[in-house]
Image (cartoon, rainbow, N blue to C red; front, side, top):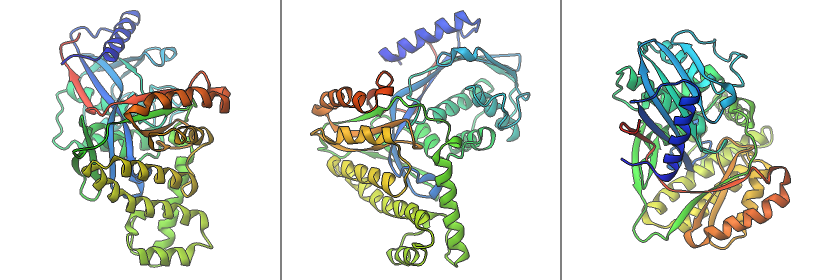
Length: 414
């Protein structure tokens, strides 16, 4: 299995970093994990909705080799100032340690902590070097990293899991319990299960995965990711946590009022929805706005699923755009730079739909675009975004993405 041009460039960076930092990966393996592009429902995972998305070709690559020392030694080509992150398995800082809060090393330390807590003994450490080109916000960089490191440590130690959802749960626990980021399971699931040329449909009720091909006759389109150049802090420091708390608060209010539900996605019936909005809309207007988005997005979700199966990409785009408006106006999770990107590309003929991506506030927006309009979108962003957001003119970027496998392992590159 050959690497792409971008993969070759990443491998060169990794090998140079390995030499410069005294990390021996010769004869080891390379694991590549993808980013993800959520089609729906953004912010639906912690609200109990079904999920739909694809793996995209912005990656994290890890070159690694087991050692017999029990020590984990890792270097990131993206964070060279952090140096080599080294520790003995089972001997890491406590969760949410201030000493780790501002280094990428909180992720491998968190993984070691969670694996130990859950009874996975790592008799072998690894020596490894990482490099990634996933934008920092909206494409699930942290989930890709956690999936990659967990899979690689399991491989090095001969640990096999029969249910891949175990990896999802462990990766989520790293972020929730060690780092303090209140993420759901969307990102880890979409990266781990992604399949080239297919969309992934996840049902949280039974944790089932179904792959949805794009129907015959679909127009030629591209996924475009519009990186605003902004730095998005971790979810624990963002509006994401506030929105999650609000949704949980509304569930509690409704339960106390006698409604039989465990999450907002359990509000499925129009009559029940209208009753709730009439009963609580005045006293809890903001919380009811969150329900409005989830209820509407959930109904749109099934239309998007059917449109994708039918190859009706125009309808997929319209629903994607409608979700963006709901995220902006009802869920209130977007940000000014994200919406500036959306406003710019919305004016370009051939853009089928656009909205913010990911946790919110900062990061990236996304668009579904006719293939023949890709260059026009790039030109529009290059011209208009620096005028509107001059502070980020040198940091913004446009990515044209392919649909790819979430995980690939290369055994003969080192």
